[in-house]
Image 1: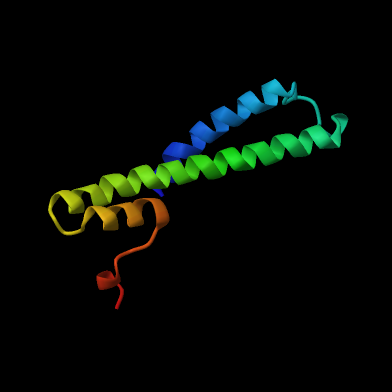
Image 2: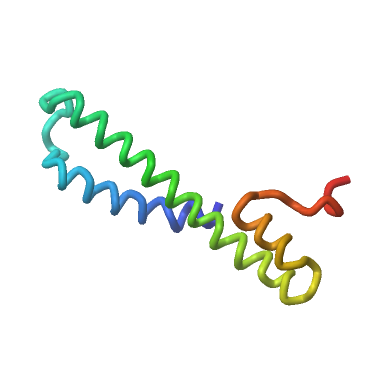
Length: 94
């Protein structure tokens, strides 16, 4: 939840650059523009949001589970699996 609150404003900021690059102004209705341009911008923004959320989740899990790694509770391979893949160790699953 915290990573989303931090990362979504960054995604919004990056999406604003996409709309500027495609010369879409916020005070003009979207139906005034070509549909292909609008759909392309929206798809690019969805990809940006997905990438930003993934990066935020990776950073927050790295911070949280990095402490467990330093304390010796999990191995480096387990830290990598948790952080990048979302796979938790078998010993945690009951």
